[in-house]
Length: 114
Image (cartoon, rainbow, N blue to C red; front, side):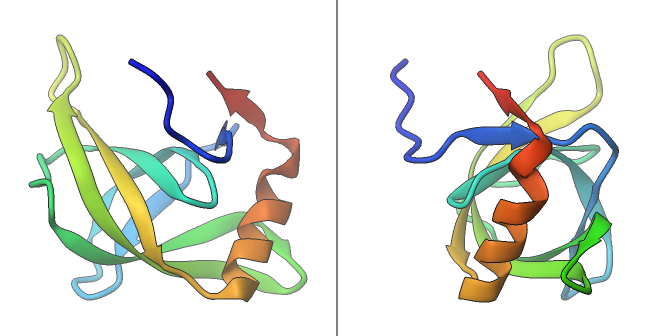
């Protein structure tokens, strides 16, 4: 399968929880992120096409910013082999320019995900 991403995905060194802003529920943990999307690991299956307004709390503040919010659409979800967790691929569909900058600065030191 050919990689269609325009920007490389970066993986955090620490656990970063992903929160559904509308419900306040933690829907998973960040596996990797780029300016165009993210993958998360969660306990529940998410139907493709589901829309969310998500928030992540930054492990280290960036220019005084502690959280970032953005809108996403779930593109796919699959159960992890031999586990109860699910992997979900999300496309970022609504994000402010300042939030893009914060994410870019946050992930500068993170390792690139193959």
